[in-house]
Length: 205
Figure 1 (cartoon, helix red, strand yellow):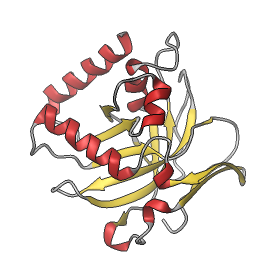
Figure 2: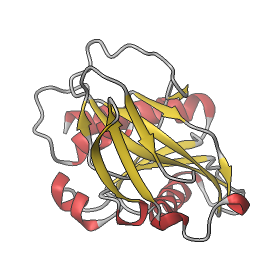
Figure 3: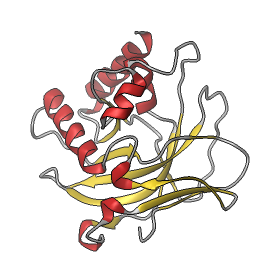
């Protein structure tokens, strides 16, 4: 559909200008979300511009059609494709297309290039607890819990699964040696943007 074609045009222009993108978003890394979006397989899309903000940053949400907050784990990859580190983060998802139902590959692809992500401090893999994928996640608004879950029970898929999907996708488009520096995937269901202070707690991360 139009949203998916738009995404591919952006992707193609970015590839022409600067080679393979290094940051990627995976939507639907496990079956429940694939079924929710009515897509046949996970959608992988480049994070094309202005995606990263430091902790406590301020940015505009004007004219965003869909505005949701989501606990997100940023995964940093090593040259061999292994996980080199992670950073607890919060993403603001948005869609540019108000006339699409919230499903289908076009909608998922559009969500993949979300509006912004506030990235916390990176923790290298050697400093992660052995059970880091089973850590609990809590999203609060004004210190009241609004979403609770675990990294490995993510509605979007585990970080390791998302990383493998992204690496496979990039290799098919750009070759086995294409660099991938960052992979992101959500960890809990999204929450509507509302007035207040949102905080994401990944425990020891």
